[in-house]
Length: 273
Picture 1 (tube, rainbow, N blue to C red):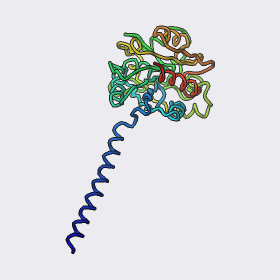
Picture 2: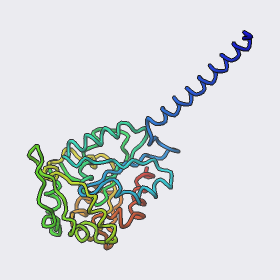
Picture 3: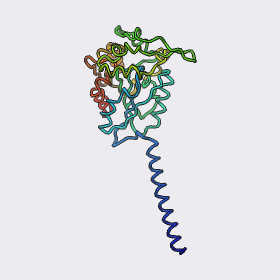
Picture 4: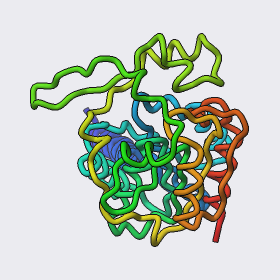
C-alpha cells in the first residue's frame, strides 16, 4: 500500500475519533445537570406530599416548562421528615443557579427542613402545604383548627418490618376527602396510584424552619379537608407570606384542579427580587 495514502487514512481516523469523543463528552457533561439554569431563570423543584406522587404536578409542570423554567418533580420518599428532607437536600446540591422550592401538603414540612443552609434556594412556595415551626408536627398542625376529616378516611395501617406503619386513604373515600373538585375518573386514578406515608412521618417534629429566613408564598383551597383553611391562613401569616391566595372551592389538591393559579404563584416567587 502507498505509505502517504496510509498516513492520510490514519490521520482521518484520528480526527473522526477525536470529533466523536468531543461530542460524547459534551453530551455527558450536559447530562450531569439536566435542570441547569436557563436564561437566568431559577430551577423550580416541586415536592409532593402524602397520598400523592410526582405526577400530581403534571399540569403545573406543563405551564412552567412552556415558559422556559427548568423543573424537577422530586419523588418524595414519605418515610420521615428528617430523612425525606435529607434526600431533597441532596437533590438541591446538584442544581446550579437559583432555586424555587415548592412543597404540597406534607411536602411543605419537607421543604421547610430541606434548605439546610443552601444559599441557592431563593423562595419557598407552600401549595396547600405545612409550614411548621420548630417542634411542630403535621398531625398536630392539621388539628389546630377544626375541619380536617382525614382520620376516618384512612385504611387500616399496613405493618412494616421495622415496626412502623404505612397509611393510605381508603380508595372509595379518596375523591370526597382528597380531591373533591377533580373529575371522578381522575380521582380514581389518583386513589389507585397514591403513595403511602408512614405514621411516624406525620408525627415527627420539625427542625428550624427555612421560612424564617427565606421569602415564602402560599396558595391553598378554601375547601381543603386534610388541612383546614384556617390552619393555612395561620401558617401563612406566621411566615410573613409575600403572597397568600385562597382558591374558592378548591380541595387539598389545588395544583391538580387549579394548575394555572398555582403556576402563577410559583412564577411570582421566581421573578421576585
